[in-house]
Image (cartoon, rainbow over all chains, first blue to last red; front, top):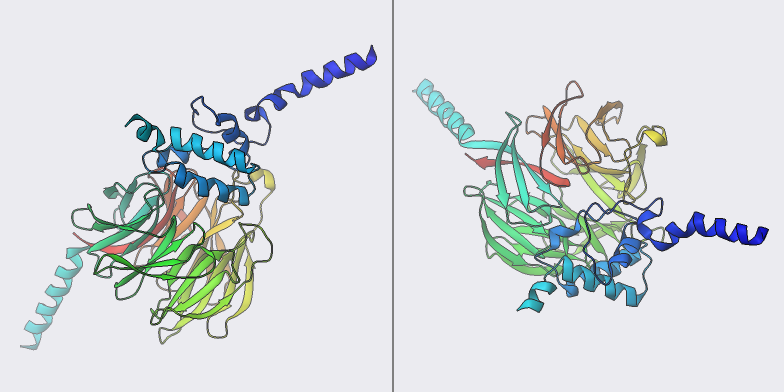
Length: 107
Length: 342
């Protein structure tokens, strides 16, 4: 019984942090409203540990996946915790929602 | 006859001075716009548009053209100073950072931050990217020494993060500061220079990653001769992070060479030291995250770009007081002072 109460306490105490990087203390507020889409959570978890995302929209009409990819790879060298597959997902998300890829898809 | 000539010369001088206007060119690193601030009135007198994520700025010696690197477009943009319109977009080898221009205005040197890095050399007459200097490192800032003889790069990675080249041959003259860790943020940040009476470069004042201060490097002997640490304040009083491994970023020697000014991101303060003695003169509380600094040509005012509060602090050099704060674009960083045609 006591063990069950202990597990309930652990889940109630830590589950919000486990579920969403947005709520983890020491992460920056993104500063922008990220659109829903594949990669959104990875962007929040991988990028906001070091900085806000306020600078991202400035690239909206200029960078596609090809340019976001080396930027994200560079960020990993600066400490972002993303594996190669996650790097690709993040670069695709940024290229689509903060780049030129969505525009290209519509052509 | 003599008096007539003197009056004629004076009229010419006044006419020339009136024909030019001293401005601070203020980049905005999260914006597409660049602001021009008059150093007499401290008012914004012009705006350049169409340079997204603008990073570096440089001016032709005669003020006829301005040059800006765009991290979003991977270009060096050439702007006509009279019309404030972009006349050319010159392609670069990768994502650029800061730029500098030679004394005669022929070449602009663009630091390339994207791997493999290096420096793109842009011919301003041909408006072409004509050469690439392989530094073996990612280049953050480039400078041309006041005598025009050397190109200096502050870099990350590679074998030496303060990398010096001849502007005649573009061959390496020397390099200092090997990276001390594997961190991608380990490197050389902004650099300032002063000169000997004959105009040759005397010292380099070098900001280094994670140093809340600067090192003094004797240009002739190529040795670090001093290191200055800025005043400390309690951690809870600091400006909020991130600091990007650069607690102090932004340094400049006033044109009269009597003082050196250093930005502290940690403290939201710009600190002044006398030259050549490096005696501490005081600090001026400015906006959040002062990131870069430039001066009025008469050494009356310093202009600190506050990257996190989106404004520029105007500091009276004599009294060490902030006399104005000018709202600009998003994340203002690099700034320069130049004379433009009225």
